[in-house]
Length: 345
Ligand SMILES: [Zn+2]
Ligand SMILES: [Zn+2]
Image (cartoon, helix red, strand yellow):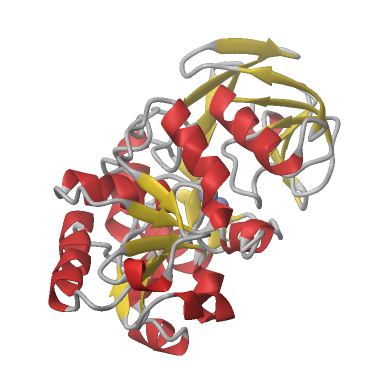
């Protein structure tokens, strides 16, 4: 029994032949199992979709009711048999509803983790370690230079800036699914109780988070607010809006951006960000390597991002490792910004 008899990498995503499904396919397929609702993993147009309720709901919000021929929800820890393969979903700690998908057959377990992080996030279930034989990992931040640090310390920087510049409006660029809501929740956790403003593109998903019981405090739409009243406030917007004419409605806007990429100063400068906040929904180098070791997997398949360094690290530790050259997974889900950035604002 080889792992490839359970899951085989194809250019459209990993495929389970006996179960007749793909995981996070990048092209339309008959049956898709989807780890989470970021648009590079969750595409519209599949025949049947199996995912958590939250992932299905967010896909419906974005793509409309006809996002798939049919859909089926599965809870964390629940098992389902597909063509002799046992499939279970487990929390990935990435965004609301995100899951790792475990596929088992003939005593071998392969885990496709999608995107994940192994640190606490007040807006989603914590990452669950699933022991396995083969672990499929992302590699978005798989270089030793990426150590994300403490998100609360980054939020403290933002709040300090708001105190220093009460006449300015602080705009925080954040991806609309997951990061935006996490930044709001972290601000509340830090004791910030003033209303937080939202770009229109953030509204529906943020309201959806609230409907799932995630408390985000008082939120207001920027649309309709008068310019002077926005002094000293915090607004969450898609990163693309930071360089948009849209910013003219704010008094002396100050651009912040919450992303793991903000570790790279040049990138922050390039994007005109004066307050980079290193807050990521992906595991950093330490998170990736400790998770890989903890799964006990002897074989590691690496997707999207800095595959080489992680494959090398695995090989040095005596693990079998290979990159999966699947085209279509984005960096930090930048494609989400394309989906919703600018909407009706
Ligand atoms: Zn993602
Ligand atoms: Zn991804």
